[in-house]
Length: 180
Image (spheres, helix red, strand yellow):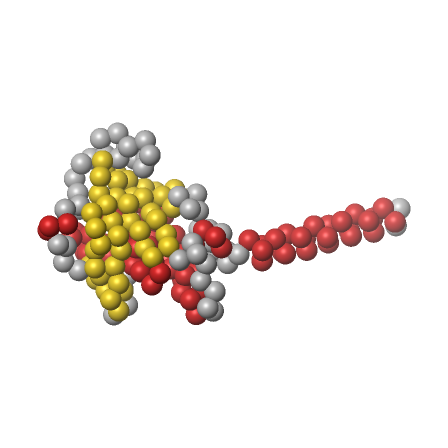
């Protein structure tokens, strides 16, 4: 399973590790950013600890552009989580969006969230990811299971509910016509 997230914000200021970590802690997320290797510049693998276990995420900081989105003259960070690193990437991206008062985009799921929506969305995604891991049902990509900001588990479950409601409505119409 992997997820790629884009966080974009106005201005060219880059977050410091300390300010990002403070935002993560203020949000109550169990993520501890590792020290950033200065030789890696503004991209590479950022080691972290998620719920007491080694983790991390790939990241790249660059100017916002038409491909990544974001305001002209702004910045964008691409954050990628793979496998067991997915929750760390989700938490880091959501905290960064809130810290920089930017947007978080999930290109796989088609969601673009403003700063105050990012953390609740990430919490839902992390919970869904953990449930899938517990059930041994990890999709290749979170969006493959259509896990949206509403917290729905799968479209097939929602499809069954909608189908059932449609059948009930048709039965009601049929009975109404028969009783006339």
